[in-house]
Picture 1 (tube, rainbow, N blue to C red):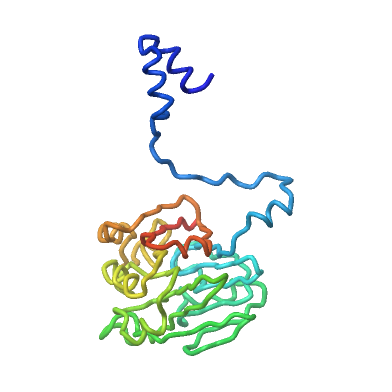
Picture 2 (cartoon, rainbow, N blue to C red):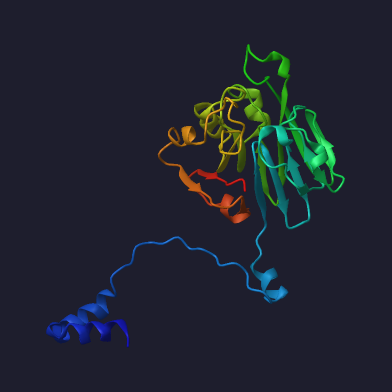
Length: 277
């Protein structure tokens, strides 16, 4: 039974006039709903997969400042792997390249990365496994404090037409030179926990400075971190994000971002808080 027929049947008092109004005006509008793509079904043909595949990157979060970025060209980039002292489960990951922002135990556990990756940990331009990485030097964790911790290197690179940046343990607002060297970017992985790094307010400013379209926070306190680790939880960031940002709190530890998404004109900045498990 059609919508118009159903309406006429259930509301007989409307008569032909009401029925005509329904046919002209259409059915009542339903609230907009987010479209969720179902997981691929077993046995789906390769031809169908190829037809629907879009260029993009998948970003998996392991906690703290550690990520694995992969694409459909079999490139895999590990970032800042940590050891057990942080509190998280030591990640088990394989990569062709491993980026290390600085040499501390919570960012430089290269031994955890299998696949014999090429390790990149210096400022400047480095070619690795067919990718070009630009390392930009940053101040040590907090100006005037913790000088013994040393400087860090922020990295940017482009994959599948998407510009990515990881700011390591950035300890102060970005300088004009750093903004020019890094941005603009499509996807930004940025510390937000404060104390050793920039805090929530400066993280928002960094995202705005770099005109980031997707922002993924890192280096904040969770249930897995050591209780005495003096950094703030991600909730502090959620209190200060601009009202025109779109927030996604994910139950999973990865997200796929396509070239089509970053190319949408006038799209709002999206903040994606990933799970680490």
